[in-house]
Image (tube, rainbow, N blue to C red; front, side, top):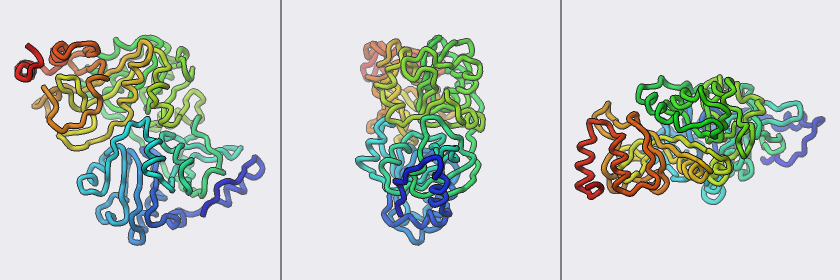
Length: 440
């Protein structure tokens, strides 16, 4: 069924395109027992094709999907399909978090920078289902909003099924010739929008403590969520910022349109907003469409700590769920159970601290359970997986302040961390720290 290898030119690409067109049902029939299928994440999940594959569940067995963050339906994770489909991922979300304890999904601990290596050496996929933008006048399409691990899988997989979606924007850096695609499915599917939530007072406070540490001409990495949005909303007095990130969303667009983000002083990819995927509303989706100032690259590039460090004044901002007085960060486990994934946190922590004048921030609210429990604890319970080690952590920030742990002794860092705990828990934390010999 393989049809890759056709050489395209401006005169014949339309004929080649027509020759590759199949229906969603025909695409689903290409899937065989035991196949290992990679799917894209967030906005670009090819729902039409995946629905058709799920409809064949009664015919299929031991088909394994690999992905990251799903949006909307993920029918291959339904309990009734457990003998037909399995799902392997590097990040648990609302769908896979339910399937995980029941054995229908498995989680792979893997730095995002090493994901392509994992796919090549361990998972070894043979099918890629990918959403593509419409071809341009030269027959070039693009991987649209997600280059991440998709680009590597085009190289690795024997069969590549591309869903041509007119709603998917064309992005710079993700271009691909149609001769690399085995089959094409024309399926118009509005992209889901992922609107930001309402910013809380705690998130605004955390953002306000980070903003003074960000200077003109810095290069920033921020994720998606309330704290990143709060930080970005605090940067309107800055000048000439650059962006090298794993992902970016609507907040970056606002700063770009005001001329605050222009990348003029980056040492690498000057003038470019660099990331491996885009996540947000129609605002950011339209922003990246054919935008030469945005460059999407593979995770091997965006998340490589050495590449990250090539930009001076690199600032990384990431989130945590829990912090102990040793400075150990938990960002992917909740109450001892897997909750999300490591993503690129450690990649950017290390890349930023390797950068000349770089800074790394880990943020978290001081409490959980509506203020009834402290997220800062004396020591992590036995067996708790550590996301970012105490040897890598630099700044930690709560709504009560920011402290730099790098270079501090174990006693001094414990005192520093207690200083940004919620006042209701400071006395208890200090007493517990004394019990375990952390402070005198």
